[in-house]
Length: 619
Image 1 (tube, rainbow, N blue to C red):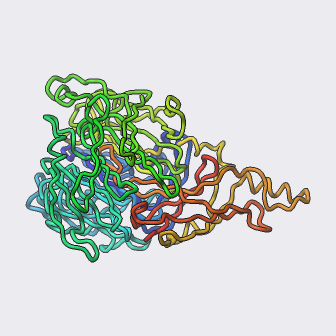
Image 2: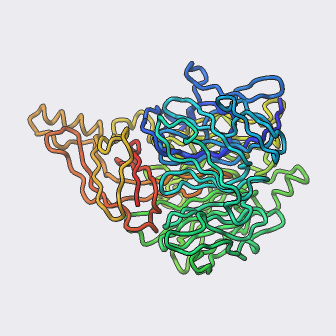
Image 3: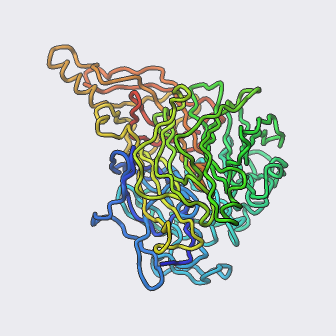
């Protein structure tokens, strides 16, 4: 069954929770392309499991959002992590909600807009009057969806979470090229018109289709690239107390465009010196965006093969230590030069790249160190896990490239990368997934430590049968090993600030106190108390760390604004006369260069096992 409604989805991660060292089903979506974790809710009952966790199709409570396919109705999915088509994902400060959106102009979805509302858009390529939703909010705790209203086309767009928790989505295609859409952080009770998308026409200075966003220390979004756009701009256009800027040309984007493009959705990371590391195709520069000057040019990544769309690899800024003096970037996967045209013109699917490049971007003499993954991967997603010791690599294929039908063999095996291990001992394959996640799949970290995974639609239209890789609209959660039940006794639980309460506000360089318990330590303390040994301490407590993770907007194999920082722990001690209860005092990052203003998930880590996160707002 085929329906011409291209699966493109964006999701924002709102404060939420989930688990993973395998994949388990979570829900079914009406569409998938971008995910965002949304900020503003106060529930953390999300559940967990080990390895891969599928959506609860057999549960009576499971939502069934249907998309019409011809004359039939068909279940089409559950939340996924922000990714393009079939799931753009974004994480914003809400306790448990993910915002999802899809492109608007290829027909009806099976999720109706409420109260008989319809979208009337004469620019739409398929339906000028459409009474179905192309965006939804997924409540992880309740396993329920709420339709949202998107007016113009969001296809292959980008996004960020603003400092106040508003999900800001930029660009798209057709009538959406220059538009900006915003969704505020909402409370559980806010389910009216105020808790929905609001569009601003022509808010951007240039068309932004396949662009990348990065939040800046002043809270603005840096927006770079897009098809045939060799420039960058800012949104809002004017910084607080600053001057208005428009489009800034960037010759580097011209230089990195080859006959297959291979420089769309460039990888952008904010360095600890305030400059922007920008990787496109097979090389990178360090940009001073304030002066529009390249301050460092890095060597070409060994091998010279492309890593950006459509030869889609992935990239992360590796976790930052307290008061960091250096920063490293990891780029993994991609496709050999010529792979896109080989698949498109000849039906030949070239094996994807097996290599990763790792570089210290703060080193004036920086050089790439090349590592080899367990298997080839293109269109993979890389997610920083909250223990700060691991990177999850999920989704994608072992051959071909991104694009319509341009890959043939799924890569079912997630991989864990441990950056602090010795070279040669950093990669470990995990339990295989049961569902292919090809072009237009996505992933996003949840507050409970799971990785939400969704999407896969390599077709120009939705196609659910009679094809090699049917459109996938179900959501899964990848459960890292730390969520295995064998680690439950070591898992911290933050009790103050309360995970069920409102987010905590902090300032740069301030002190924050976290109170938490660890089951094994509590049990040991109770045993000690029975033996007359006091009860303030006990075994079961390992090395305690505290991490903070920014919500990301994931699409096309890149989690924009993904950032993990270790906080300086100044003291961890048992609470007197409270068995198994501890406090940790931490120092927040000193500046907005290290942690741009906004919402972060904060985790207590016992050894390698993280707690469920709490939302903290820093400014």
